[in-house]
Length: 275
Image (cartoon, rainbow, N blue to C red; front, side, top):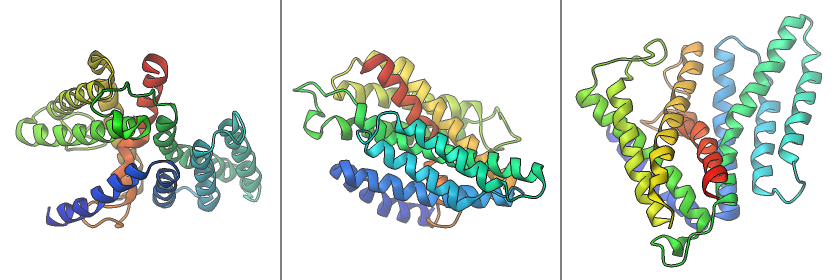
């Protein structure tokens, strides 16, 4: 716990500084996190018995993230980059003598790249975020920072609520074949905590807090699904953590797994129902 507290005390201020700068600084930070997490993803996939092209997959993930930061370069370029990546990885897999080996390498490389590239929605959320009405509590920090802050606090509140409620009141286990410690009580506690935080943040952003009745649970469940998805990969690899980069916290992927799923879900909700 001491290691976790020290690591959090160092990382959280850095994250807040990055968010304060926003723009290119935020994009660079997301790109760095993506690269570090991609290394861990492909290491886990290798540990699970697959043979991905790690360098090629990491490059594809980074290209998707960078495209999110500069969408004006070519409209629809994200899909184009994915298409080119699929082609290039397919060609690279031709070197495998056994077609089954080539197919699994092709598939697992694309999976790893697209999975971790979902972090690009941290940037996309800031790009499409609706303006904050003048006079709203968070209007001084701007839409990009405000909406990304909502995402950060939503995911953190889910983790905190699920942990505290699960630890003190958790009795009913679920999906124990993936994560033995998860409980229904913890899940409910996390959803409630997220909904309350999202409602408060929406009010501060000048939006109708009633959106939290849908957005809170959606974001919470997406965060939980992201955590479980990483657990599937780690269990397949026989690993407890994705790495040892952050003392007391494991690897980078262990810190961002919830955001991998929560970021696109929140972004889609904002585009469809708020923006």
